[in-house]
Image (cartoon, rainbow, N blue to C red; front, side, top):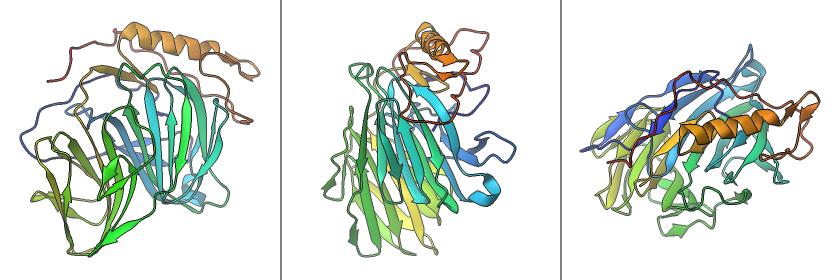
Amino acid sequence: MSNPDRDPDELTCTAAGAAGVEVMTPREVPLGGPRAMSVRRTLPQRQRSLVGAWCFVDHYGPDPVAESGGMRVPPHPHTGLQTVSWLFTGEIEHRDSAGHHAMVRPGEVNLMTAGHGISHSEVSTAATTTLHGAQLWVALPDAARDTAPAFTHHAPDPVSGDGWEARVFLGSLLGVTSPVPAFSPLVGAELLLEPGTVLELDVDPEFEHGVLVDAGAISLAGVAVAPHELAFQPAGSSTLVVHAGPDPVRLLVLGGEPFAEPIVMWWNFVGRSHDEIAGFREEWQAQLGPDGLRDGRFGVPVDDPLPPLPAPALPNARLRERGAPR
C-alpha cells in the first residue's frame, strides 16, 4: 500500500526509550478519491517511529466496499523496505514490477521486498464486499536495503490452545517458525482470544513488541488497550502477557530487535539521507510518461491497467539526518 498523504510527514526515524508499556492511538488517513476508504495509522508517530524494524502500521475496516469504494492503489514505488499485507476479510489483487501477480486473502500473508526498487499496485477484487486488514512495512538494514526485489506468499497453519488461536506469519512464536524471509530478527502473528482469556507468550527478551488490537479490548502487562490502539512493550521482558476483556479479541503481535540504524522515511521510500530520498523521487518521476509508466529503477507492474501515482513534492527544508537511536 502507498502512503497516500499528499504532504507526507518528514520522518527521521529513531526508537524512543520507554520504561514500560505505552499506548498509541491512530490517526485517520484517506486513501484518496471522493469516496476514499480511510486507514488508521498507528506507526510511525512523532513519539515513536519504530517497533523493531516495523516502521509503518496501517489498519483498516471493516469497510463495506459499496460505500467506501474499496482499495484502489495505483502503481507506486518503494525502496529499502518490505511490505507485509495481512487480511481479516476480503481479497486484494497484487501486481508488481518483479513479475508477480497474486491475491491475498484472510489468513494469508503477502510479503514484498522492495530492496533496490520496485513498483506495485493493490486493488480490492470485485468479489470483495467487506474489506478489513492491515498493511505493514519493515525497514531493511543497511546490508540488505539494496537487495533485489522479491515476493513471498504464505498461508500459515493455525495453532491453538485453551481459549486462543494463532497464525504466525513472520519469525517464531508459540513453537512455530514462519518460512517467510526477513533481513532482521522479527516476529509477526495474528491472535484470536476468547473472552477472559489470559495468554502468557514466551518472547525473546531482546525484542521490543507492539500489540495492535483489531477487535475487543485487552490489557497488556496491566495496561488497558482499546480497539485500534497499538501498545508498545520495550525490550527486556521474556513474556508478553495479554488479558482479553469481556468480548472476543483479535490482535496482531509485531516485534523485533530494536533497529540499530537511523532511517529517513518519506512517502513510499526508506533511505538514509535527504539526497538519497530526493534521488529516489527523481527516478520515479522520470518513469512517468504521457502514455503510462516507463521502465527504470522501479520497473513496471505486470499487465497493470492503472495509471501510476505521481510523487508529492518534497518539503521546502532538507529532510533531516540524525544519529543512531538511543
